[in-house]
Length: 406
Image (cartoon, rainbow, N blue to C red; front, top):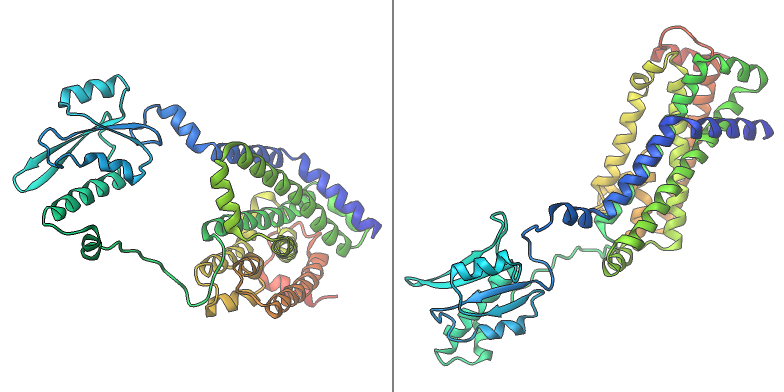
């Protein structure tokens, strides 16, 4: 155990001292901060964007009295911007927009039997707010119907409000968008940390450090120690990124929006624990696979090609998890729950959505643990025979022979 801890400490220190690790962490932290400040940054650089914002003013001119004096009823619509109803010409509205007295203007005119809305703005890419357009159309229709002597009750019967609500057969809780983002973060964490295992092994082979390690301890100790060391280093990086995201969300996001996001994710202590457990187990599964690929090459430039099969397996598992987020109770979801390559990405979110039973969680964990034991046994056996290979890249047949050899 002492040797495993020694190898783990050495590996973690070497990983966290690398420029690639430091630069990647800094870049990701900066991107997270920029991401949470996206709206503010866009507004700062773009200045007057042309889009209607809360509290801004629109002037409406109905010189032809198309609405028969009923435009004041727009105040009852509770629009997020102010409405000023004043007879104005195009030039008058233009002057007020240029002086930043109003954001936009609307001139209402008759066009034969139709009604024309002339939307006047400083930005040609801007369009008339949809809710204002709907409010104006509804107000005009109601005005014309009232002239026919119909009551408000009759108007509602003729023009009811239509709503659409999509419901699944089984209740599914949680925000799918947030779940996909968290799943993407887990994928990056597992892939990045596991990939470092093969990179570390190959790098040490080229520097001959591996010969010293092999003569001083067992290959099993090296594999477990390196896997633990890189895993802890990767976990520290993830904690830095998560803390940066939490602090950025508290500082820069609208409190109401943040409350909506957090309340819709259904992240309970149990879900958080399951996410951590599946992350650790998923990392160990892929790390042992990458340990094999790292020991089969002798040059750092060959790592990418050697890791391609494992990388494809990782992507397959991730996409199985992503593809069933919208249908977490289907056959593919059931398969992904028990498939060890996809369960780390999928199972915590099925629990979050409230569609996974206790039996499914236990069986999924059991299959994943057994898979790790099997893969680790194979990886250590191949690693023991391939680690001191400094020749050409080993083929699959060579790996099979090494596994069978004593």
